[in-house]
Image (tube, rainbow, N blue to C red; front, side, top):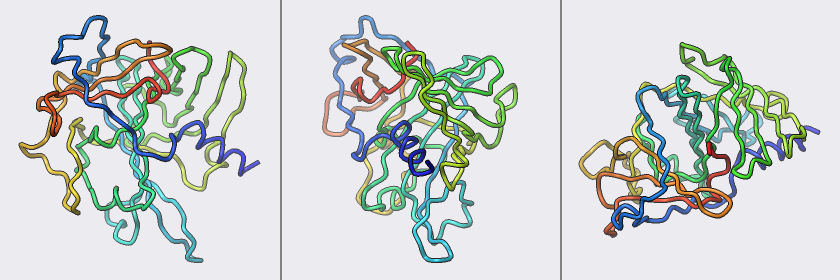
Length: 266
């Protein structure tokens, strides 16, 4: 049962094994913005970060660890990062995944500042909402047939907690409860996101060096703090528009196809 729950969790919440494929979008340059829906990331949104590291246990076996202190990362390899953007006022939650590099080098050699959220690394997106008490987050698939519920601790009320942990995951299909994953029993490490002081969505192609991504004039910054959605067959495309053109192109926006938006608000 433990193995089944672990497999089930990664099928539900993880997102394949290849880097997410954004595309350079020309809709803003061509004025093809009719029927776009917008989501503004105003100042009520708070930014949470989860980092996953590969480490060795006492028997020198590979294990995964998260919530690692900044002072305790020297002998660990960072293999994945994940983001949460949440607004209690709007009752909206955005979960953004990135994909670990199969060589387990990319996320350790490219260290963005804690305040930088690089859209170059984005893979899949879950858009959801809080319940009234701030204790559960609901994600619904675009066709409405599937719902994912995260039971979180502590509750998110007026005060945003320093740490946000997923305690339980419930999966429903066509209104029927399919399974409940008790995370602390299924996984050795808790799924916990750490509150960051601020966050900035940028776009920058990673250099082939170990230099960290810095805030400088070469960064493309998200314009107007808006995300854009356009309805297509069986879902939505998602667009990010930046203040500079994407490298080697005449456009300043990138998009992700409907298959990357696993759960949507609309």
